[in-house]
Image 1 (cartoon, rainbow, N blue to C red):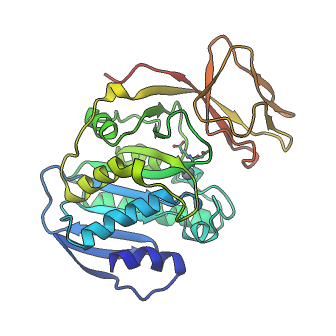
Image 2: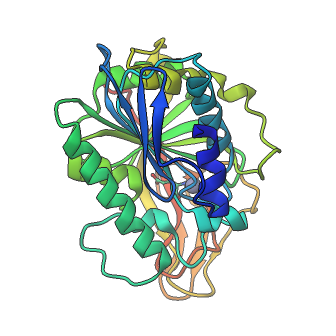
Image 3: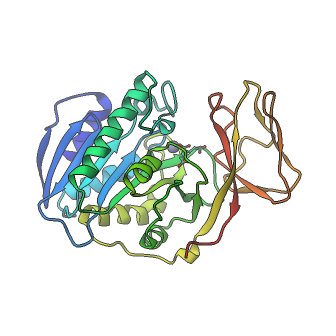
Length: 328
Ligand SMILES: O=C(O)CCC(=O)N[C@@H](CCC(=O)O)C(=O)O
Ligand SMILES: [Zn+2]
């Protein structure tokens, strides 16, 4: 039943039951690709957790990982102990195996969004579901893991982006993420209007964008390196504290600058296959843009994350980051 939910959301069928029982609770299908799991009783460490996957349609490993966790719950190998909102971000893009259909959904999560179109409509629907979910479970700490994979290789294949926001991240999160074999953390330096930023900015949630390896088609993913992350998701389902790790084992960075594409002729001055977190020395030319001019590294070396010269005009073409002290 639950496992049917993913297939149903992807092929547009409406045949799967809209609600039903699960070990320890029940599920409710709230909207296409939006499922709430409601426990009979909350366990001691329950959070009100939002788990989103497929915000970018070509990022399939998190969909497979979450599908496996739901299958274990349905099979009785796990017992529901916390409310969870499970969201399949952009079903139309997932069906096409593309990052997005018309525009990048992960830049649209703001309450004053007034654009028209399929992705803006989807962003509004997802925001409304998140608002209602946190409202229903206001006595529990809000949490949001938005699971992605990256276009390029990375010096740290598994890393998280901590969105900018007023609410400090609870220290336990660093232990949880280290225990899930996350290798690096990147603190955003300004509002980014991503889905994880939405939950942090408007709801004070502990929220992250998690990058879990490289973006590959369904069936081509090696889920073995994601087993510790799978165990963290299972702990969230059961409402228990997961096995923690030592945050000192993770590398910490903060964003220093965003390279924006201002012109159709924008180009990055390094090879397309440059891995995330590659460091460039002072004086290196990183980008040329007919409108904004060239960007050269200043006195401090900068590492590049998410380089993509092919983004829409006005969008971020790379994050430039520097090492930062671990949180205290
Ligand atoms: O590999 C890439 O270039 C993109 C991977 C990706 O989709 N990353 C997210 C990060 C969101 C954030 O900054 O929190 C995105 O670009 O939306
Ligand atoms: Zn993504």
